[in-house]
Length: 195
Image 1: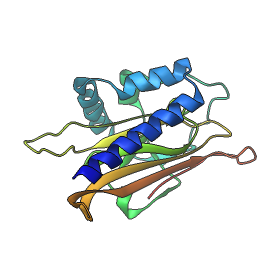
Image 2: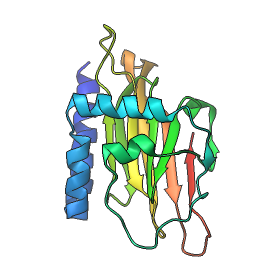
Image 3: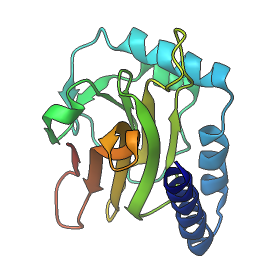
């Protein structure tokens, strides 16, 4: 049990170090504020994602990406955002849904029991993630999401962890999904995978 809490503290300290090393720009502060949004805002996001789920998936690059960076989308904009199909999706991410607004991508996994989400490497600008609070009498969180901008030259790796049997017992933190995003300078479109 102590090892699990030590590991969680180590992951949090590592993320704080990555963010501190990258500096804190206005966009990063906005991302941090959205990541720390109250539970009601997260629930609103979950409802809006469910409302948008009815639409069909479009290719990730169906609409051209803007040349200039834009502000993080509002909750109302996300509500109207179309679903998109990632470049590749593995079986672990089959229940996840992706939405795109301008150059911003939001990947939501509503049924995953998420224990932690972390940026393993890449640009921190605009990255936000959160885990839904427990619902329906459960003590475990159900659902999580990541959001980030996709801009030419970007590279990111984000890991979503879950609980499972392991050395620390039934609540060992285990990798569930890895999201990778890259857009190399000479490529016509970005590549985003979730597996």
